[in-house]
Amino acid sequence: MRKLFLGLLAMVATAGTAAAAEPPPRVKITLAEVTDAAGKETLEILDATALAQLQQDLKLEERLYDKAIGLAEKAWKADDFTKAKPFPRAAIGKRSLRPIGTYGTKDAADTALGKEEDRIRRAAERRAEQEKKRAELNKNNKNMSQKSNKPSPAEVERAQLEIRALDMYASKMKELKAAAANPAGATNQPPAAVEPPPPEPAQGGAKKKPH
Image (cartoon, rainbow, N blue to C red; front, side, top):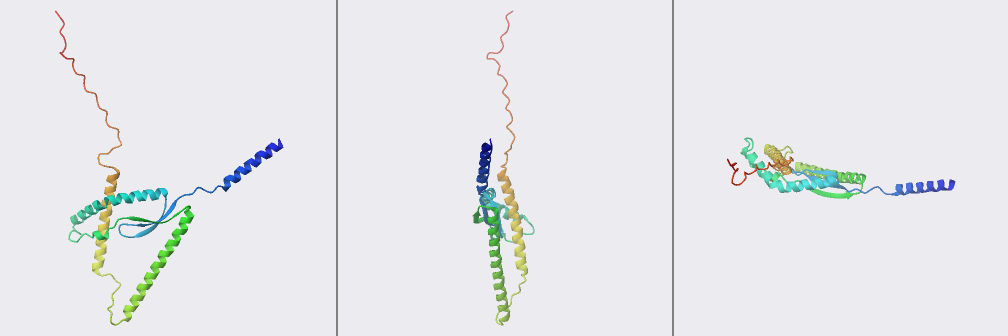
């Protein structure tokens, strides 16, 4: 009896060790750069489901882009504030996705995200330093006209108009995507039951009883 108990205990221990030795199930985590309609880039960590959903959403937006632009331009021309100004179509781009890497764990994706953010930050710092050096060079050069860092009124107005156009486009794209998800006339209710036609009278009509 003691041998049987020790044997069962050894089997349980062996099974537990084998289970503990099995690696966790691998997942697919993607680090991607997403660019919005205004050209702003953001980093996102997406699992397989979120990535597939975003890719499907971008594909739909690609199909609806020209129509959304047309509707936004129509709204632009109907707006008293903007109708006298040209519609800034070039300021409205298509949303896009650029995968940077795929990882088997969330921790690995987070590490890659941190490295990518550091790279972007260092690049921005280098650009800022170059701008500063150019500004100092212009300041010390007597033959070069100095340009103020303050935006001109025309630049401010252009930025405001672009923001307004982007808002109009986003609104029209949202409407088109909602309509695509629920086409006009589509309902979830079952079709109404069709009533059978009334019975037709017998041929020749009813016979009279003899007197």
